[in-house]
Image (tube, rainbow over all chains, first blue to last red; front, side, top):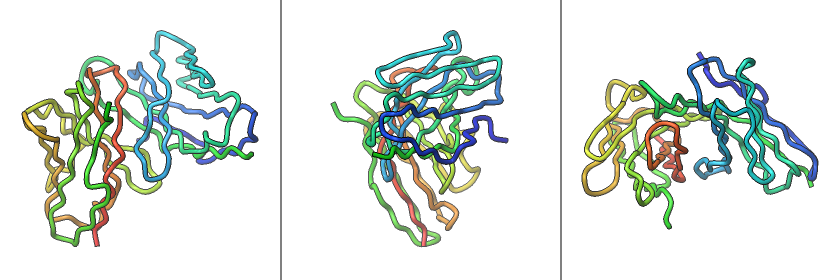
Length: 115
Length: 114
């Protein structure tokens, strides 16, 4: 029963182009979403987050879009750079009530940015 | 401005031995979380602790696993009588607040059980 799904295990993008990473969730109680970036042999690094009261959040080259009706979010990276090559994890949480501290992760999407 | 620290980074144990994983949260953070990542999987929540309290251990296996976060010193994840299936990367995260706050992760401990 995977509550957070990243259906693309991998993605290749040319340097300078847009990278779009997708994430779907099934638990309608989730109201806070995060993206983490992970290099091999390192811990996940927080990138950007979005609350369910918003549909977009932007931070430099990174933008996260949230479509609550579709239970879908996406991370856009523009322009993509070779240093962006990593595994990207989508995570979700419930901000109140039981379990409000657990992050539920997807399996990740490996992004390769080709120079 | 140190981040979350974990040690050891790599740990090799034989079946039946004990594994102790340590985590020091970021300065000013009093909430600690442990996650486990199996190969080709996402991170799975194990336990959430505050100083001297286990708040939620619903993600911990029922036997052999325990965690603590004493008043002084790091948080410890202890695995007794390790088995090969315990081989994984164990990540610790900390946050200044509970719920709705970003969690900041350490570099992880890679446990290999021979």
